[in-house]
Image 1 (cartoon, rainbow, N blue to C red):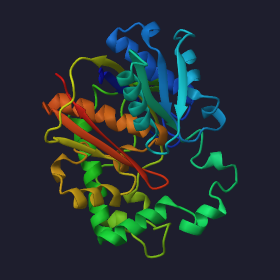
Image 2: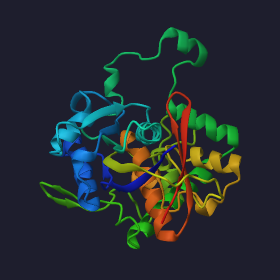
Image 3: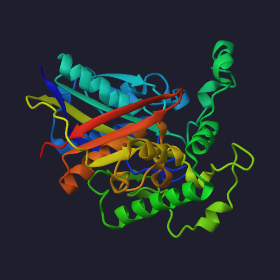
Length: 339
């Protein structure tokens, strides 16, 4: 039985809301990373059989199967199909899973997985169109689900104080800033030309923050709560793509050397660490969504792109990626660096 390997992975910088990438159509943002895969690997796009693309807010510019639109916007052959996946924040990670399953099943020999979200142009929650997606049958079980309230509940369950969450957030920014300064994101980022210049680096990283500054931020989800804009992921724009093929080498399970746990809210990776007893130094070593941003449909592929490059740069064999998803879901993926 064949297995699945990632040949290369690339992403855009993550732009702040209404920042450097806000003027770019999300299909063009997607097409940019598709084109970069071809440029980096030299693969003929004609051999790619499908593009599986994560996107959460499938409305407006991100509707009508943005995966297929991206293929055509990239100038790839019309024979290449595209399918768009919504598994909330795990959409592009699920795209990788679907691509891997297709390779293992023999449905594909070459496939691209990834995702996009332009949260500046297509606002989070806009796909609800002022309607209620949760029927009375679900509300009777859970009320009206809300991730911010869920993050408050997590902090309360695990006993995390506001100061602990803010300390975690400051550490995320510090790690991301150090990674930028050391050029550790350079290999994974494809700079994006815009009408005003070129966006070359993630825009959300803040330097010089203090606990006192964060403590002054409001807690919008709960009076006297602990979740603020300072210890939650940033609204952002971005895209990421992975070229995947098959190989005869199989995957073995060994000790994991690096973990990427999405920082939707600080309690998420903190609770994961408390439950698993993992190595804190190996958790989000380059910072996470609190510092870099969280373009929903692209984040799974962004985390995997960052993890792959981190493994290669540091000689780590195995890495684990996981992220929370709306509706009480989650994904986990173990990857192996083959060279």
